[in-house]
Image 1 (cartoon, rainbow, N blue to C red):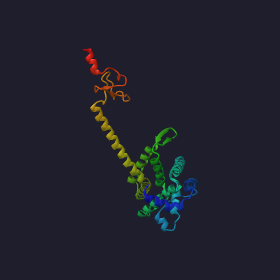
Image 2: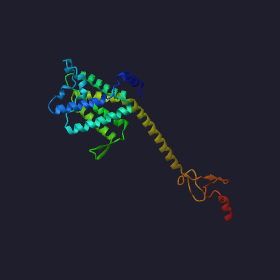
Image 3: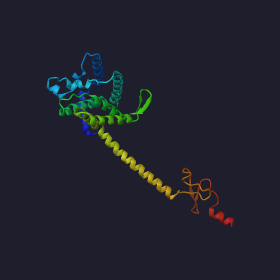
Image 4: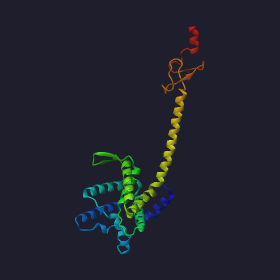
Length: 269
């Protein structure tokens, strides 16, 4: 992790409040239920600079608990997954860093919204970055889709990035700004590790290429040791103990004490 990210964590340490993320998930669940019953309009929670300037200052915070406008089955599935992934990420990173991840995502989203002050913005893309961060740190974690189909996290992350790209291309200005802010937050926290992994991957690929080249050269040159009696070679019997005797010829362990090849030929004549 870069030094400036450590500095951000030290600055945010006084804001280290436990159970922040569960409170956000609980808030989304509450407002979804009251909206589903027709008792509340969830659009009053969305963020908009125009509404803030008009005196609705609570939107600076409430957009984090604004529920998505989806069917209740999908909402229940999304909330349960988000809660589990958030807890896993908090355990892996620690509460201070995870809270900072949410805070910085909110700040970047609010800042980007200045370029489109009249359009409302929710927190859906911020929630998506929690999954992206988890998938990057745990790429081989297997999700059971519909409790039947096993899919690794890295493939779902690629699908999520594709959907983000699609939203950026086809969405309005507010959507594009939300995507940029969300991915920017990921870049801040995961960028240093991603660069280190890429450098390590290049070194690993170069090492494998050198190994393959060495194997090809060795195969072209033939085996290093071949027993003059039975024909065993260091390629066919890599664990064999080959030795060279006074006649400067190679023998395997089985024929090491056999008569010298030259002496055998002389005796035959």
